[in-house]
Image (cartoon, rainbow, N blue to C red):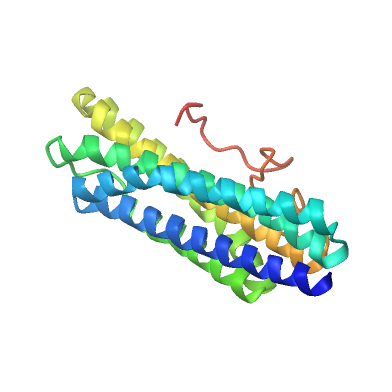
Amino acid sequence: MERHLQREIDKLKRRLLALSAEVENDVRMAVRAVEDREPALAETVLRRETQINATEVEVEEECLKILALYQPVAADLRYIIAVLKINQDLERIGDLAEHIAERGLFLCQQPRLDIPFRLGLMADKAQAMLKKVLDAFVNLDEAAARAVCAADEEIDAIHRDNFQQVKTAVTGNSQLFEPLLQFLHISRHLERIADHATNIAEDLIYLIEGRIVRHTPEVKPDETRSGQMPGKPAGPPLPSDL
């Protein structure tokens, strides 16, 4: 029984790693589509969304099958629970890559615009967080997971600054509203990708330590799955749909 369970867990890990690679690649392509104004890349990301969703469902079904057939306990049970959560976050990151690609398609049809903030810098940091946490999952690296949690605050600060700069630019020239709104949407999607990377890091810490660390300031003094922590400095209000 133990040998069969380990074989199933190994197979599950391979599937999750495959999904991780697909999602990471989609984020990279979506960002490139925006930065390099390449609609073909954006369309590729959009076509792949169905595949990402199907893989996410397959991983969840595998988890449920293992729970039903083998009734794992202790570390094995923690692993299955962590995979279920990470799987969901990866699917949502895939959705955000799709949203970035959609914005990119729109912007490719508009005149080139000098945006008032460094979107590329934010994209690099968000992608670095995602790559680091996926590598941490492969290596069961708790220190790297905690570093990802700590990095989320910087991404949030960049997004708040982006909002203020767009607000200032639009006040000076209302004709910039629509294209700058699309860039601000992309900034929000990147901020959410960083949030999901942080969620994965928290689940990885749970997997390694057996301790739930969400909502604990020692891990990440910033936004978690359920929202803002008490005592977090309030940034400027952002539209709820951004």
